[in-house]
Length: 174
Image (tube, rainbow, N blue to C red; front, side, top):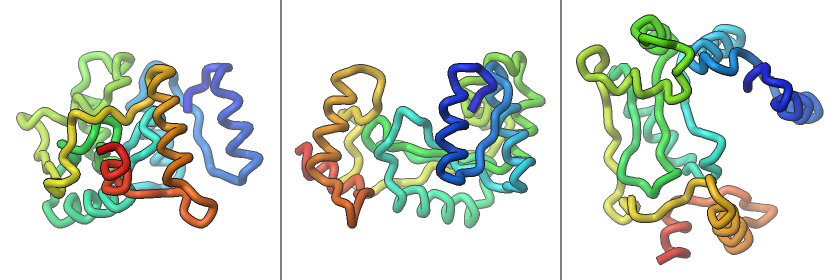
């Protein structure tokens, strides 16, 4: 997370739960990712955003495998419901993108720099046809989104199985 004072609560939660954490630039998100990866000796970065709590672990595993097999610079999923897509790239590729960025302080949407085929090879993982529901919105930006998340979790999550698949979510909603 960032070094902004408002984010101190995230550090406190991480420390209480023995979760490694990193705090860096609030404005230069790419640099924050680079420095965190360097600190923890990470070569491959999987990016999901905090407002997307339903990202499917199976698709993340498939994306990582596809990324490695294809040798792409940047891999992503598309066509899943809004809020379920993820991205994979290496630390070295992120460093190259950071050097190309015209203004790293505007790097909140850092993967926009990686989506340029002029500079990077891009791999798009195909999704199962029954999971391709881009009309479904599963991201949390508004109160109604949070209300929907609460309904989904109360319907699908159990103590024994707190994580569920995109297939289960789509079945519930359709």
